[in-house]
Image (cartoon, rainbow over all chains, first blue to last red; front, side):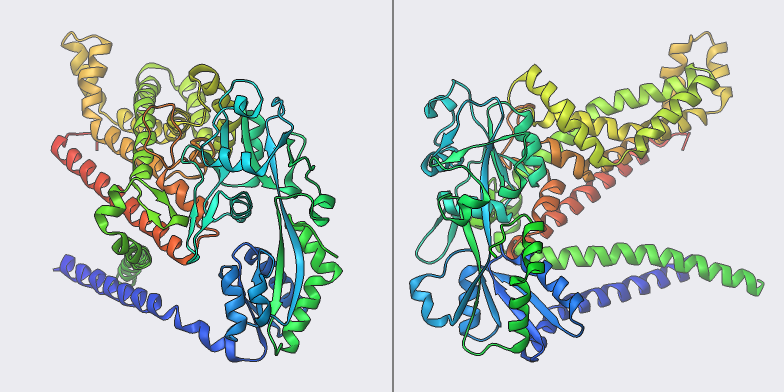
Length: 289
Length: 285
């Protein structure tokens, strides 16, 4: 008798949990739309590489300005342009330069930071200099031995970052490991033999302890434990990224359309302020101001 | 029945419902988040596909399943003999004093955070494996060894307890029948304690499958079918943890899909284990 009663109550609890679970799962998506129309909320949409930086900025901005609200969305650099065209976002973000055909829909563009990726090798590696083409061949698995690059006869241990990582995005896009077709479909051709490490720190640790290995990290993270290679003869540094001679770099751009709200303007001013640029540096990117 | 007792009964009932509700909620959440991705690829395609490259829209997780199973199997291969052997030593062979020292050392192992195991593996174990076996060192072996050490505390403490709780009459009877100590342990004590030993192994296996941080750092995370124990592999849990932060919505769904498969694997393993235990039955539980 008693056992039955308990069973019934447990079943009831389960049923309740299930319904609330399903309801909350369904309700989750509709909530976002309402906020966009309100004038107070600044919506930033676009590049997923810029997204983490925008989120940090938004957090800091909202902490400083009571009542301000900034919402950061992804979608890709192309989406950044599209969303200001369609007016669904106040600010579009791109992790590349604005293309000529896109200039029409952009009123103002602000470079908020530069992103540079350094190529690092084990300190015992003899090679000093590498070209973009060689990097592409190494990361797509076409070149597998250092002797093909004029080094000693040793197999290259390729170290990569996880899918979705911003650093991986920048590196593969700039070196051409990531191929885009006309429809905008992306194919990441990183060799399946590459070791994958989940963070900048673990890439450095792996490369520093593995002979004949090669990896890439955000420029700000290069340390003495590894050797940063010259790319196309140019040393990786803040200065060479800012003057554009170091090739594995890209700008983070905010773009705005015709009518821009006061709060969006205030947010961009904050990003370009000393404090905003400090945040840029803290997050491993290169300040531009 | 007094009122107090009734209130107490209800309180206990609520606690029971809470834990069941937690399981139910998690199940609903994982399934509702991950099912769309699995449906899109097709259940068979998702499980048996060998190409995991989310950026390219390829979601086949067989290499990840193989990675998880390989690392777990190796961990059990090393961990079970070492753990059960250690438990026998503590419970049957050595004296109370030494056992206490050993026990506290093993309990200390359980207290080390898994990221520390991972870092130890990355700095010490991986280079050793590279020097001994060649390759990059990031491998199934590295993961298996670290996991074996990590599941030791679980296997040793539960097995030792169940061996200790075998009634001493069993041993006395065996010895008085002329069996020596080794025979007594192997043929009387261990069989009597087998149900406890089994549950320790199942718990250890659960820990090995679910472990994330340590294997993430040392298995190399290469989503490719492994051919040798020196090959690097990616595990189910490692891939979820590694790729979740910046995943696009579709990619995220696929990661939840991995969560579903992980869930199913663990339910299946637990089910099989319980079936085995029921079949063996026996004392010492």
